Amino acid sequence: MTTSSAPGKIYLFGEHAVVYGEPAVPCAIERRARVTVEQREDSHLRVHADDLSLDGFTVEYSGATDTAPDIDVSESLIQAAMGYVDAAVRQARDAADAPDAGFDITIESDIPLGAGLGSSAAVTVAGIDAATRELGVPLEPAEVADRAFQAEYEVQEGQASRADTFCSAVGGAVRVEGEDCRAIDAPDLPIVVGFDGGAGDTGELVAGVRELRETYGFAADTVAAIGDIVREGERSLADEDVERLGELMDFNHGLLEALGVSSRSLDNMVWAARDAGAYGAKLTGAGGGGCIVALDDSEETETALRFTPGCEETFRAGLDREGVRLEEQ
Ligand SMILES: Nc1ncnc2c1ncn2[C@@H]1O[C@H](COP(=O)(O)OP(=O)(O)O)[C@@H](O)[C@H]1O
Ligand SMILES: C[C@@](O)(CCOP(=O)(O)O)CC(=O)O
Ligand SMILES: [Mg+2]
Image (cartoon, rainbow, N blue to C red; front, side, top):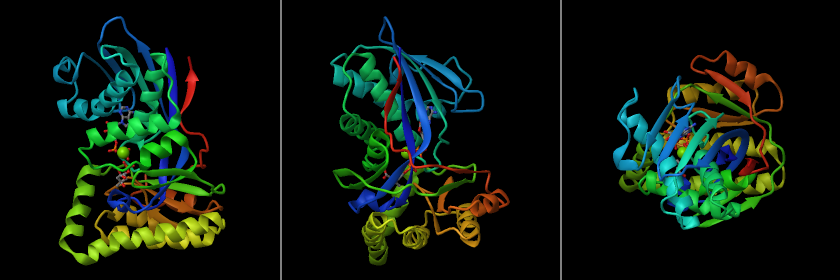
């Protein structure tokens, strides 16, 4: 039996634009997904996911085509849930040259689903790490990242950057531009997250930006301007200039809003944080609903978010300098 965990992330800058080759800077946060795998005698997969619905569920199957129908959850939820797990298992089987390996898999996660905190990447990264270790072929974090990207790319039908998976695998702050992925230095940032309890559809939101970008030159310019913000943001990060970082996050949020990926509740939370004196605030991840990230060393932003209509949860999320790690073997 092997358990690995991997962190979720927030985007300081650059989501969406990173899909078109602009740089992005995500940071791993201290919220993790833990995946436990145990090799079976047969080639079946039995997956237990506690967090997918209020009750959690278990599904046993031997492949994507013959999902066992004897459980009380919709087919689409199973497909959505199993996509990443299936793809992670395919990567592990491939890495170990063990095409028939079967597993009992348990997923536990502190990362809300579809909320912009990279739950899919954390589950995929931790899953590949645990399954390859279980098969006796532990991989370096960079290789876990590469395989997790292939898995996400497959599930998201070509609409994925390397940002989430690389960040989750190596931890800390990272910079991703196309295939160029590297860890960068960052100070401990006073990160506050606000969560509206909802989720956005990453594929749909990415497709929306793609269409705007193809329709209007100024939308393409907006995407390019986000790239400029990221490059400026990297300098502020190196200078540890938190005030400037906040200003650039505000600017980045404005451009994401213009690209149509914000929502009323995300905007409300962003404004609540700014009014409370945060250095800056923006949505994180695909948008549409889910989380915002703000920088504030005082308690003011958390207090304000607690009283903001539409905000369901707020928490401080320290930068997690550790990426994927073995928990137990
Ligand atoms: N705890 C979990 N157990 C099983 N699958 C999960 C878990 N958390 C996330 N996932 C998978 O990740 C998907 C959400 O990923 P995505 O839409 O990219 O949003 P995000 O990565 O921002 O959370 C879920 O639909 C599910 O397939
Ligand atoms: C919109 C995007 O830039 C980030 C999506 O992040 P998340 O899955 O919402 O956490 C897509 C991507 O980079 O793959
Ligand atoms: Mg995701």
